[in-house]
Image (tube, rainbow, N blue to C red; front, side, top):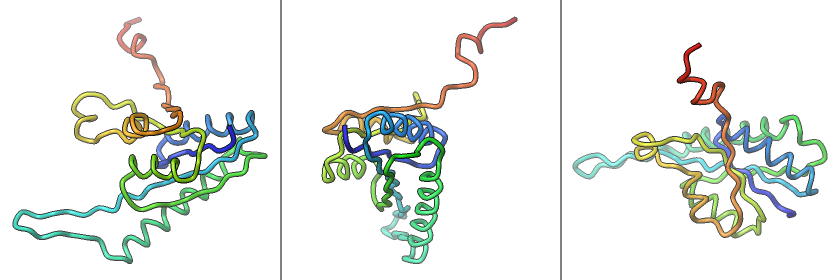
Length: 156
């Protein structure tokens, strides 16, 4: 394993994915790329109108993402690991998979929020798209809850 791609949305789950990827990269001597895909909002109105953000707003979104990636690159645990970063604009799930394919990554690491039911249906799951579509292994990471479900349902 030489190249690891870590997709991030800067959430705690993504931070857990980065920590896990750094651990693997340290052990394997692999390089690591942090990837953030900005999903620029656009809205279609009833009657045919469409809102598309201005180029200035898109630039602000990209600059915020680049600052977030730079902060993530400074995360502890990355000593000795070559870390690159990349910001794309598009659709996160397909673009993560496409970037990994185009650039020959051996592993994709992505955080997952573990949504279920209606929230998953409404919000979708980037991690699920990546797992289902990728040509290489995908490792998902989730921040463990503070109390396991069995403890939460037990009275003392």
